[in-house]
Image 1 (cartoon, helix red, strand yellow):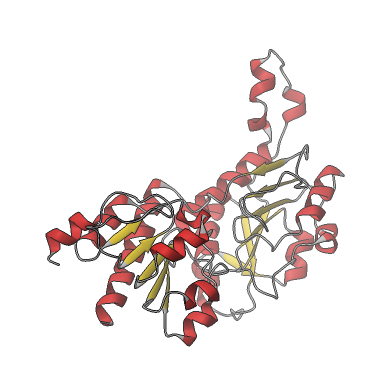
Image 2: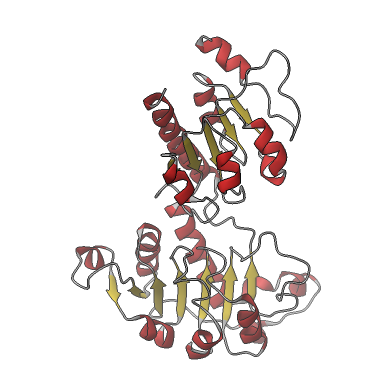
Length: 335
């Protein structure tokens, strides 16, 4: 198939479980979640690409469409587990439109020499802006008063917030995204501390990004705001639970745009409802989307968003092109 034929065969996004059509070829690459159109077009110049951003919702349809594919491109909701991997005998690469890998069985991929290709660093600026925006919203408090003001209320005395300047921001984890947060927080006059056991205290990055290394317990006890920047592992699951929340300042702000499962959601809801915490912003959850029985109904000083921190128009383009290029290299390197 020449380049023009491949581009034509890319076709329109397919319906979950629908046949590709008699004239269509089995896809080389299956994209199961949102991906930038320009990146898909670039892949379609040389490969047959099947794209359906909702395909992750129907695992059986996904397995059928991808049966002969050589690459999957996913975000965080597609479960790339061993049964799916074993059902795809030609699979060479899994592109991850993001950085977390907890939805991918990395060990099973390694056994098959399947490359796992995250978009490391491509959405760091988007997440950093999100975290700083959350800090400002929660410290000032006033931005949650739209309905009251529109209805004629004038609750100025109820909405006197705090400034972030001079406050201590504690970062749990000090990788690329946390460093991007540190730069922005320091520009606002915050004092930045961070805990990262993988970095020695004399590592140049501390000075480079304007942060001071602190032990975990000190950050929990002394920080005015805490932002999480660690992966979900056995060591970090439930890291912020009832005991940890109990050692935080009652005025402290907690932000989790890292991974669901790091925070004990029920314990957080209880702490906020009891006034033992100043506020929280969550973008990630142990189960996504949240079930109707989630503990957050009616909880004060809480902002919830749908796993969107790293997704902007700009970051989606960066992430998509990075993953497309990596997948292309993987496929071209293995016939």
